[in-house]
Length: 162
Image 1 (cartoon, helix red, strand yellow):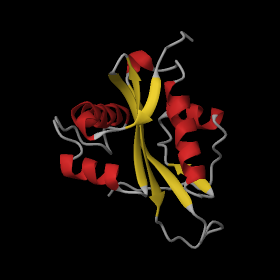
Image 2 (tube, rainbow, N blue to C red):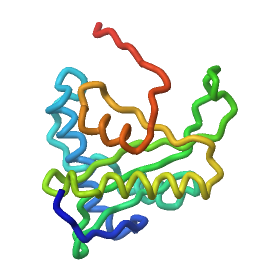
Image 3 (cartoon, one colour):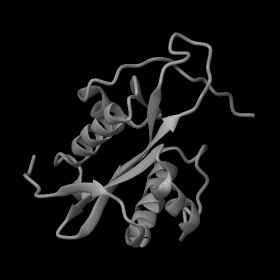
């Protein structure tokens, strides 16, 4: 693994264009990985500016970005999980990693791990009991990343194409 000098910080309003491009890259990556689920769309906007600003202002959400020399190379969006499910964790306070993406040329250099660690720290400061993430079974790189960071399977969601 090559050492990469990067920083992690909270996103700002002026970061919107670069962060939106990363959301779009996340969408494109998932289309290539799972074309039957993610329809191919040439999108210039994945997240509306107003929704992005809403996340920045929401005390129950955060977007962290990774930068190298002021260039945004990765991001993680974390939100409180408001799912009310009758399982072993019913009533627990959870946060969820909604999106995490690092540009391919900067992967396997500790950026994803640092974004996860920052999400964990934020979740602890927000008094969450758990931090969860949903990962598609075919996304082996993401599964490995989360498992290396001590995430454990909780359930399996099955789907049937209709």
